[in-house]
Image 1 (cartoon, one colour):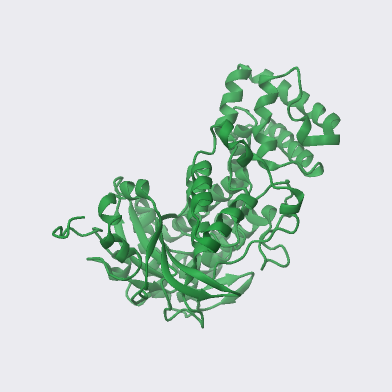
Image 2 (cartoon, helix red, strand yellow):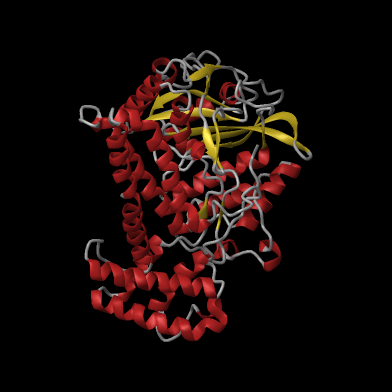
Length: 504
């Protein structure tokens, strides 16, 4: 960027700060004493319609480190509440984050630009509002991996080291993440105002959410019930997609569930290796509330909390409002089941859409039996599905045998049923195998690889392992011999007792 170039870095249009007065607090980020780039997402910058060269300049670094407020920005800390592990906290809010502003991307979509780790705010609750390099890079990596997997997610535009030492259980390098989201509206945003009996602000917030995410509902009678239905449908699709790749969010509090249907807040998240629905990696989930297999039920529970905030808008008669909201919530389970079946059918090469009861039940039974085999024999979830296509390409051998060990006989019985089902649908095996490879990733952010990369970045600021892993997981489907080790699960020593931690 030329020193004489006065073009703004962002073309902000800040509807949240402008239209929702009293729902946030104007605030400024803390300064970074010696900022330096960790990562800059040039592809995302282009998608947002931003000048990547300008953002990658010293002026861009100053803005993304909090040292210069870009023209047009209106930084605010957003207010929200939330149920955390089932207990309600009436005031949470952006304790270390700021919404910098909103831009319209190349596709005409409104996108939030926000900081994470930019210092204390009125919602910090005694914390320092800062973030360390490790959690910032974890969120960057996970968001990009999920995007490459086709799963709705917030993404990172940049990660910047602040040059400041922050203190947790040890001194750490400080960092700021610049996060991009369809919006930062959460279930907890609605809860904040509902808990205070401020139904007018709940109405304004709901109408803002409709205008931003479901504009086709604006003129519809019963638009607030329709908003609840739309959010439920988005979340059913999202969680089914998580289940299809073995992703565990780890902290599905209501303040971490978006109205947009994007995955947000990659704290103690991780991917399954040996398949077990009871898997928990989060160090703070002591009772398994957010275990892998519990995620659909927790999503529905969170949506019920959203419904509670909308009841006065759904109908003036409380009993009628409850009945209508309950009908929408009851549809979540069937919607999730349909999406789960659609995703998992693709994973094992089956064609057809849901709706034919006999076929649905038979295919669901086939899938559940395979998952039970994976569980019984401690088979890696990702490889257990990815290597199924090899069984079509090499029917004379059993390329899955090394994964199943002593479970070979059980596996053979299931494979016979599966091959018969594929034969009945009449698609050439080679075509089925190629379609399966397009539905089953080979490369995910393996937990031991993530930790190795973050350890190198945190300890010696060596970003090479991180950048190598980022390059692998953002091309998850195409097998590459040079990346063979990245497809393998961790050793018993690496996986035993593995725990992830909140980034606070």
